[in-house]
Image 1 (cartoon, rainbow, N blue to C red):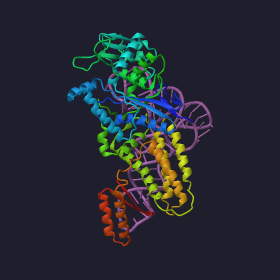
Image 2: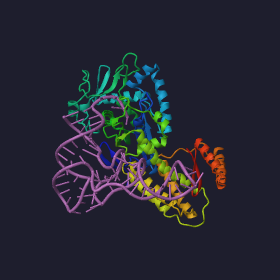
Image 3: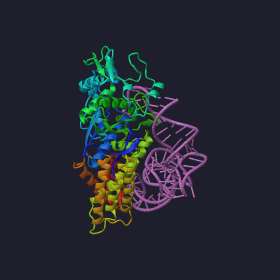
Image 4: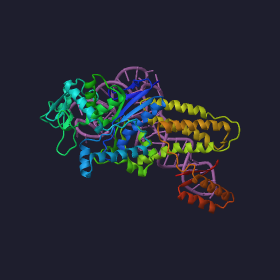
Length: 475
RNA sequence: GGCGGCAUAGCCAAGUGGUAAGGCCGAGGACUGCAAAUCCUUUAUUCCCCAGUUCAAAUCUGGGUGCCGCCUCCA
């Protein structure tokens, strides 16, 4: 039993075999840093995050490259609008990128190359392609000669003839074929530009990924990720450039995530129907957003709405409640003896099933269901009327806790960040109040007890009276 | 027009040959001094339609219908 990954290239799930025994190279198409990123972009960052986390869990080391596109039409346009330099614009949104991805509990890549820092490599690649006759210069521009690359279309399953028949590409007299795409572009007055053998210009969009991916991962690497919309033309062109140059396959597994839709329509910056992750983080916690995004398979489209987020919040809350419950129980004194009531077995079983789900093309939806099933079993034991906390049971609960933390926390990243207040003055103070209230309740002074409860609630502390004593948590 | 994908309960969603996971909502119940919170039980004779293959199909094949995406910047 191994990991299977759906490969866009073959259109099938394939057994995952990394090039190196223990290390996996991953390249992800990162953001164009001209704006805050939206929930759709977030998905494209969380998908590789989950893949990395899971492969990590399965014992692989990861080397992950995620690029910043910091030069293109959108960058130029926005910089002009805001009257800042392109570099200032880039720096601002790269900073924002890190703030937002950190908030979303997305683990950092190993390296974040920027397009503008790899111009030389791009020029090199273009020259090689010209030398091999895969590219030609025309005026100050350089184009890729699509017909020369026999396998053009293999990634997106497009046929050259069909593309031409239905093409919406503007016809340009300088191209041999309307589908030839730009490798290098002569710069216009006032645009940023670099010296090149073809005069002052700037790189086309697709070339940067070919250069940066192979520079840091070698000319054969394991996984390339991105949103489905990048399949054509971006990734198709990337394949053409890289393989025309190397003469062999470069990327082994192409992984594409589905869209986020709004009311059934794709969310995108160009349609202006998007929500930035910053806006959403004001209403929902990071773990809820993550949970929402991974509660469906990564290749399926997801419809975004508040009611969906609410549903995700409750579903996650159910998992978290049980973890809280387990943690509270582990802090209590237990009577000696007793068995684990099958909890250790349950933990093991859960881990096996979780692994099976994730092995199958990262089926996070199923993996979450596995966790829910575990939680249900635990609840049945822990909430039973005749429940007695024994040492044996605590052993079992420890297993449950560590399994849960490993799977939900390390792999899925849906456990809330530890409260900063822990270890501070806050906890003991709340404990004290809770104790006082318990005393007051014993004396049936419910008026005062309720007052304490209500006041604490106003302060964001929720009190729960349970058969095993009083539990509380910060909301 | 070409290519790709999807269609499972009120909603979200797993499930690629063996007789429908899970979550949300709803309903009932438990717990409680009252609450809040939580937990439990329950919710598809059936998987868009038609035909076929098979002992057996949500799952395979053929046809149809509907929706979405890509072919243009886009995660």
